[in-house]
Image (spheres, rainbow, N blue to C red):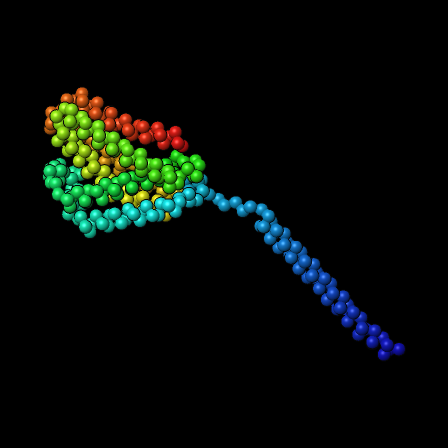
Length: 279
């Protein structure tokens, strides 16, 4: 009898231990199932819900690029042109740069007629038209364009043709006025001054047009606005140099004001209106 009692006492602790082990196992299984369910629900929410990316930039503007691949060949063309000018027409290039502030240097360059200077002038003028047209497209794309589909290579070609037509018309009108009033030499010198400043402006804006396609849009604002300020400074310097030339030739102040309004200020207003109408 006593032997059976001892057996019962030894069996009872074993059964209690097993119950506790089973209970712990069930709790751990429930916790595992619950964690698996939470993970599955989280994965499902990530797959089904759109993750909101907080915008970074000026006034919460998203960092997205709307530039197009067609700008890259034009940037390469600008680099090729400036390399040719630098290594093949270096002396002429330095004189063009010096002519910005030195009127005598500009006059000497105007009086010198040789094929080397003419070729260097052609390359610099090509850089001006291609680079300034690209700058106009980039500025329009960033500040005025709502529909990015409008900014394409065809739009760039339109800007390039418009710029060429504008300066072709200016050359014809200035030459005609000079011929009518017996001031052909003065008209040529004034056109020479216009293109001296245009050539320098193209070289200064080249780093900006090369950088804009490869940086974020919010960083382009500073460069493009700086380019506009530089362009206005060169425009004012060109006006002052032109007025100086006209004063030296004793041109009437009335005709001077009429010319400035008709051929310098009016084209800028027309371009501004055209860009607004496109936008």
